[in-house]
Image (cartoon, rainbow, N blue to C red; front, top):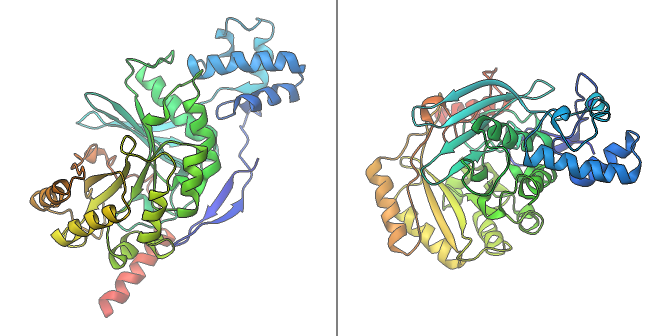
Length: 398
């Protein structure tokens, strides 16, 4: 299967075939392969079918339950066969370029792929949970104006192996092998890192199926949240084929403002998006849809905006929770954060209507790890940034 590269654009990506980069040593990395793919790979390398099936089951356990990366440590595989496996296969991890720890305990890793692309992941520890924020693409095509990642050009999709690899690496760092359902630090995953997960649907689905597999990492689908800016045609499919919790980057309640800050709104408008939320398989009061709402001073934070948000959620009878996110600044950002008093007033209006609207405490701001701040290595101005500069210049000229 060939991963797709997606060219940057204001609203929709253009899928372009892109061959996967082979490892320099010629070995096949088993991370990201489903059980039957591991079996087929072993057969293709010369194992007879019955033995390939047995070895695939053993490898799956050692890789995803034990976190082992060295075939020589797999005690139920014959010693004579361990070198044969090591010669042909690898159990890799993303290369860590830089690891940072915030003053509040948040961790951020800058990772590098085999083809030299940078991407990031973040771990956020709390008293009762630990959440890993996972990236799905190198860069992003959506150009949301409040988001630092949106200033990057979209280079390519991450493979299923690169997505799962982030979870494996985090559990290495936290010392969480062998895998166990209770007492672990990494309890939740959010697909809220770099990229739009639903524009990399197949790889995200395949990676999350591995993460949710009961014989491996065994993270419940109720502890995984996929965040989308509103790729409406893929939302129902995500509910059926992945079945995790849904979060929607709403950020505005009028067409004018959402068109500006979430350009995808020009293709899939608010009403169409909210209808897709109402139709999302599995959504109910026990599994509410989370609406992310970044608080931007004088753009989307008025009392009228709060009341319109309540009206919309009631109109579509949505089992909803609204996460209010104080805007996290980054160099050159065109917005300011709403004042704490304004954020609290907005929250109060939504709460008084019977809808949960907590204010999210920014985490990892000092290492640029907070919501909307993720961006990989420093680079020349991207097409998205240049487009913005042109727009702003034209607006200034009137």
